[in-house]
Image (cartoon, rainbow, N blue to C red; front, side):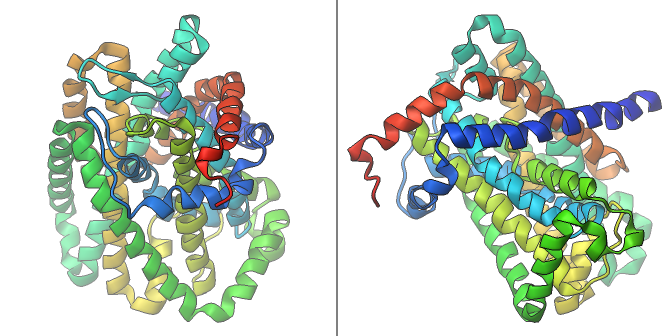
Length: 469
């Protein structure tokens, strides 16, 4: 068993990320940027106007669909998770200050990659036997590339189901239980003796809420995320900004360390820290991809359910999604750590303790512990909820809708397991399956890039789309 785990977290992980996902994110992102004429930069204002600018306007959904806003909050629910807090902390500790710079670069490419994924997901979606819109990589592979490529769609669906138990379940539940125990211990140190009991209670509560949401289908999930995601994002953003503004005198030094560290990590982290340029680049790109999931194809599964008649308009929500997830929330986490002046244990895979220490410099240890526990609860649980939908759709694609209930019950049971079990390899396993998902997805993205370029050109050539505003 150990040999199998070592293979998945070692050689297979290295192959999936170093030789598959990361090169595809950089080269694919550049290629799609050229094919779509730099849409994520040239049309950024238009994208924000037609996404965040419409969030407060009333939106309606038809039978079998959710509103465009509910679709993006469901996708954001899956992406805005522990990767934004713990993942960014790991990027800084393992890759140095410069990892934040490479995180930004990956996000710029991630915007156009996710735009392509969402656009294709809406264009090639179909109705299932319940009358719901379903889509995602498995559908744009089958319907866009042809039936002879269905084996590739099957590979994606299988990897996504496995990933749903890694990135979307075990690691998230474990993070929530750990943060809750830490928060309680800050006030009642003796609670450490009952850590398992607390974790079990947390796991059962999470599983019950998740099952309740899943039973209601995509519409109930959409309603839950519509309320949860804006609240949790604003809660974290405001709290992080307070730490940053109260340390505003350190901002110049922080950005200097980020930019110098991006190309010469040892110059700012210290010659003895062992961080090389490769580590800064790899960890920045890896945590960016883990956080916003651009290249995995997962978000397209949620966006396919949107009540929209325009693949491009929904695709713009993909641009907004990466911007919000990585360029806003991950950046705030990174700056909070760097500007707070807290000691960073370079070369060590940290948990929530690093960001907790950064917040503690302003709020104190007890309040910071409670705050991080609350933030991780909402962030991680939203990821669980989003990935439960992704896994359900992939099971439905492979085996039909009758099997989805079995998957959902098993998924909820694994939440309890994740809450009560020490999972030191959970993040590595999640990374591996994420990387494997990206391989069939990128094959499809490259094969269908001409379709994306065509529908994009048609959309922005239409005067009715009010392009000048």
